[in-house]
Image 1 (cartoon, rainbow, N blue to C red):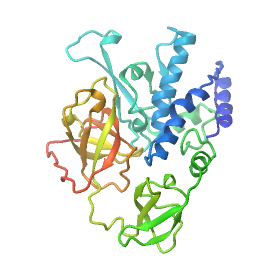
Image 2: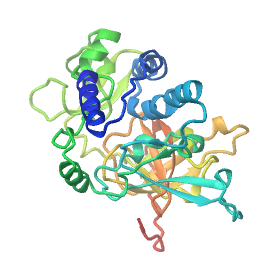
Image 3: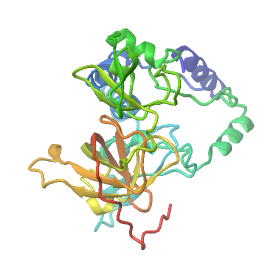
Image 4: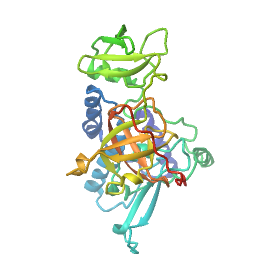
Length: 347
């Protein structure tokens, strides 16, 4: 979604509604808080998701800062078109309806395929308290229908795809421009045989199938050696006798203002989309500081792309998003997920 096209659509909608469009320049903040971090993570062999950081650090971070410095006290809420729901409830033990006694719960929306809580899981309670998601209660088809009825200029526009800051630039080209190319071997993990060459481990992630460039496949990326610039591959990725259902997670951000209890974290999303795993969570140790909090997560099914740097987002059994953390490493030989027959998905 090139910004020029976005701006044209935004201006057309504002013209139709008879309201002023104000453009807020946040390019420097975006590169400092999102893009530079993304490049560093990729360079370290991790698989970050910049769209998660864009929401917490820019849309509901730097933009909030701008509103405070330029329009302090003028706006109570920021409306966003994300597909998510907010439930505002009184804090436990409080009958007071005052703002400081209300908790904003981030919840799965009605359209599970379009749900965007995965991208919003790193918002703090302070950020959620000031936002509203007007279309989060509607399926995408209904939103399209309303846009057509109101003859909005955006009613026939295609959904945006890809990483938000790239526009029409391909992700590989973006990485190449910042990290370059360094040739290294593609090693078949079963035999140790070199099957070909790659142009840098940073172009590949665990579970990847596209872009390996070898015939006789399909080939999948199974591991990376970032010190020696080796990418390990296999044609038997889904046949390998390895559980892909367990990982260590840390670097948490909590939507409700405090860490969730492990027994509350019963559902997990590994990426944007409708699929959600049941999971069991075990705290690795009692940390002296919240920053050192880490857990071991076991999913109720294998996930083909568990990779360090990815975000794992956790929910309770009613579909409230509790927050998310960063996957530190995949774990082999996992304990099987222990199901609770009394669990009922009620969202």
